[in-house]
Length: 286
Image 1: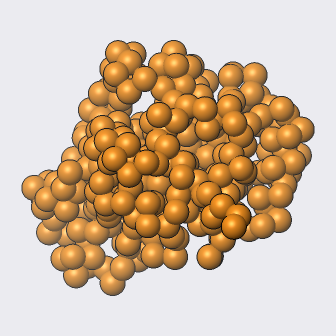
Image 2: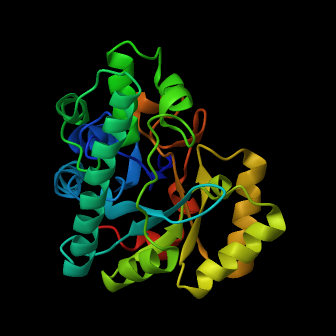
C-alpha cells in the first residue's frame, strides 16, 4: 500500500501571541491532522517554542523554531517569517525585549485613548484577556471590547475603534525590513516574506519590491497561505522561482480567532503537502 501523504504548516499562532490554542494543544492538533513538518510562528516572541518543540518531539513531528516579525511598511502589512534560528541567540532576544517594551507602551496608550472616548476598559482587564500572550496587542483589545459588550464581534471592534483613523488606534513599533532579515540571519535562521498579498502591490511592483528584499538577504516567499487565492499562489510561486527564492506554505492558523482557517490548510479542505516546502527550509527541523 502507498504511504499516507505527509503535510506541513509553517505559519501558525498560539496563545503566546494571538492564537487560542496553547503550544501543546496546537502541536496535538497538528498530529491529529497528519502534519509532519510544523513551525510555531508567534508574533514577535519566542516564549511558546520550548513547549511546542518538546511536544512535537514526543509525537514524532519535525519541528522548526519560528517567529513572525512585524516590519515597517506603508500601504499594507509586511511580516517576515523566521525559521531555523537559535532561540537563545542574545541579539535576537535583546531585539525582541525592546520590541515588547515598545508594545507595552503602545497598549497603555491605546487603552487611554479608548477610555478618553468613553469606553470603560482598564489595563488590568486587557492583560487578563491577553492571558499568557507575550505579545498582547490590538486583537486582545478587540476581544475585551467584545466581552464588555461594546462590539458584537472582533471585526466590528477593529472597524469602529482599533483601525487607523479610529479612536483607539496607536501606530505600532516595527522592525526595519532589512534589520529584521539581518537579525534572523545573525541568529542562524532564514527569512521568508509572509503572505505577499498583504503588501497590496501590482504584479510588477511586487516583483521589484521582493527583489529589493532579496538584496537585503531575503531567503524565501510564502507562496501558499490561507489569504491567497489559487491564482495568487501560482503567481507567488512563479515570482519565487524567477528570483531564485525558496518556497514555504502555512495556514496562518489562529484557532477561534480566525474561524475560517484550519491548521495545515491553505485552502478549505486543501492541506499543504510536505513536498511543497523547499528542502532548504525543511532542513531546519529538529
